Length: 357
Image (cartoon, rainbow, N blue to C red; front, side):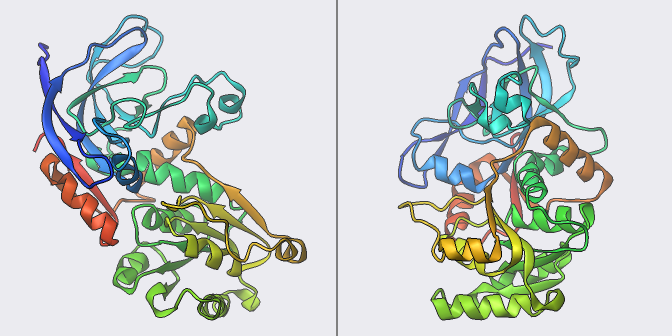
């Protein structure tokens, strides 16, 4: 198959602003151990919005799905085939041999590369990927459906595994109607047997209920004061067994207030899993008084994306219908408008770019 010399790519052209530009770039040549992937779809993640405001000239994106168009030298042991579908994740390269990798913590790899940040990402029609780390896409799972699983899906799956919750336990998801949250509701409820409680704006209640939320709380009806947080926590605890609170809170939204609230939802020995990263000035978690942790024996744990193994497990759940992304498909030229919607908090579920539309 003859490959083109040029392809379309979306460039972040004005740092600090929502500004993207569709350009033609050279189709790269795969080096040692690399494959050239003809991408067909790429999911749009809130992290892409954050990267865009700080990385001029970069091609973003880290939820890419496509087919292998060419092998570089040194790929003989990869067990991949030309034309096979593969995915490219946030961590686009991990060595799989350093101590973090051996512990299943690919995000902590000493040699990790981030797609769309340190290396050109998936908002383009052709890109490179390491043969040993590209994620195979299972047969029967459409490419547009698979794309958001490569970040949103694997991220919340890994986070839920760290929550210490057991089947039948209550788990609260803050930002439950967003790209991460709506996947967490499904994986937690259908895939892991948890009883899911959703917290988000009232406009997202229908989506959250559809994704398996047993209870929903409209965050816009509670102010961010100590009194508002206390009332929200009381209302959430009222729907849990014995009104004791949730076993875990998974904070998917990039909100400092959500972290302060999340601690209040927990029962004794509960766990708050930190996923969303608030933007702007760094702030400590409000209400995180050591006495609360001692008296209630609370746990706080961070969770950054997931391993290649967890990505494969997530994609298999999607193939089986355990989890499905609620998404709409747009063309490459629409990315700027999608970021504007993200800034206003209007995106429900996920947006996937069709890179050849």
